[in-house]
Length: 238
Image (cartoon, rainbow, N blue to C red; front, side, top):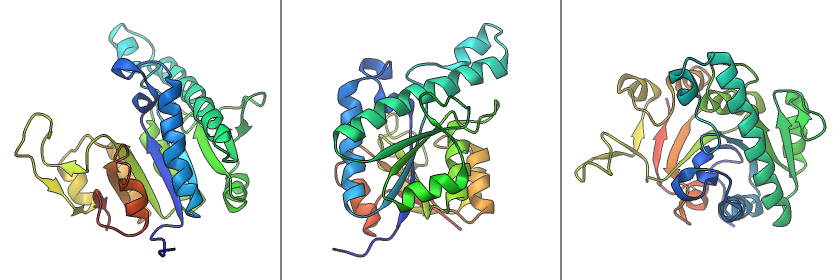
């Protein structure tokens, strides 16, 4: 087996990755696709943690446009991430992967409370850990939750799963001449105001010297290839 470039990863998925047509709702088929990708990595001996957004279930922006309280909108999004985490947990368990869901908001009947040392122990025992409910605080995105949890558990990289091959200087769907970056620094990413990941998350990664790898999760060879050290996607590092 080829030597692994990353031994412990934090995989950040959008809620839309779980959605059906239009990226809405929870599609069991999509959950099984995600589980199959994670299982490939798991079978390579990589320790895997996940953070999943909730855009398939709730868009806080819609509530804010109607005058909803920001904290209320954010808490609704956190609950949505728990639903998504349970869906992926079920798909992983059916695929034969031991999984634990941990929540930043206490709900002991369905998820373990997030405790850093316990999360690390689960990873060491070969369990996939899904972090849900964001950071447990409003005003922070699931991107920031991913950066925070990755730092806390000592992950080697945050892998941002997208539907494009990496970070481009403009939208490749609108501009056929868009240029992809193979490597850039955190500062360069922030100065370009790229929307792939929010600035708070990137700043947290920069301050903790944590690399971010942006790749196409739906390319069947991208994730496993990147973990073997192949030049795939865009690496954001110092």
